[in-house]
Length: 131
Image (cartoon, rainbow, N blue to C red; front, side, top):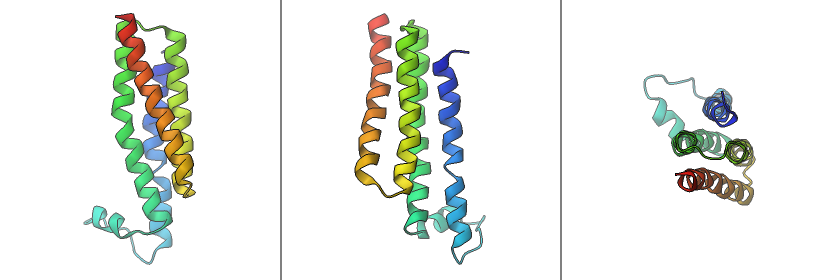
């Protein structure tokens, strides 16, 4: 398995790892977990809990373009080393992004989000250059 494909698996796992702080926030609130109305319960979280929900959702939103870029770069025969560097950069950015979201470090969060976006665009660019 190539490094970019491993990065896709890691990025997918990060989405669900980022769910742990959501459960911590619910546990610290005065509410029991509401399995009948989970989205309404998540919408009522504030502060750390709201940021944890947003981090989890944001990681989920960025996953599909990243996974698509990795697959397209691979199928196009993009240069493996550059693909690996961009894929690793994306995963590192996702980790920093989630931590920055939880820590309420908005400028850092936005900065690493932009770097992650450039990594995805770079993967698409490698595919275009190879084809």
